[in-house]
Image (cartoon, rainbow, N blue to C red; front, side, top):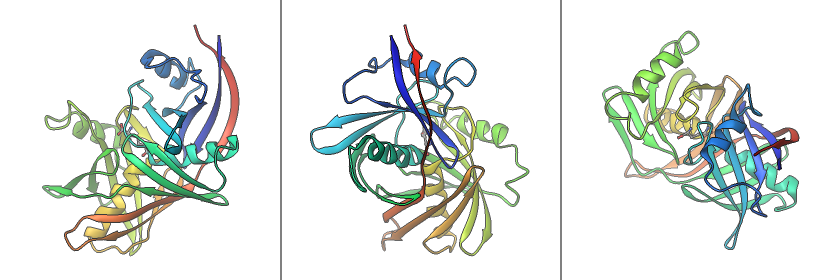
Length: 259
Ligand SMILES: N[C@@H](CCC[C@H](N)C(=O)O)C(=O)O
């Protein structure tokens, strides 16, 4: 048996996408997801996404990390799924879909996809660092020189520390570039390595940047390109109307045999 797949990327965060409206993908097969995401023995990706029918939404996005486990929300993957849905003819230029963290709306404006993220109620301060959930859990640390940082080693040290080792966390290192721009590098849980971009991570970093005086929208450079995050802050410190804006592209399509 073979599975038809599509490969997408959003600022270098790459995904195997499967049109699962007819339930072609074997349910909860962790080993298969891990195999398909393997960069040497499979297709290669940071994650795998199933686009599925849902009675109350345009579609449902089911996201798996590259290690085969069901993930939480994925911001880059969300934008890629919206582009995929458009290319399949499931939506026009506006989408209303369900993901692991609840409902999302999105609109396609040429190259850019505007994805509404869920409200963020709480930002915890841990020493000089921050921890928040933007659909996925994120640890945020501001540094002076993010380019020369060993993101793998320093990210792993936080991801596997006593507090996070059970559930895990994504770890973001942020450098302020100007009054409205930051540079972010992320160690991603489930990939267990640095990726070229993490959308929920970029969102978390922009919100933390605003706590340090930056105004919305915040421009974000990542290794794989550029994103923008717009938001509003409530008087109680929580955040609403959060939008992650950036590109999402199809890279290639194919078919892969599975047993
Ligand atoms: N790459 C994603 C985030 C993926 C989730 C993460 N690996 C986790 O397990 O929390 C993004 O673009 O947001």
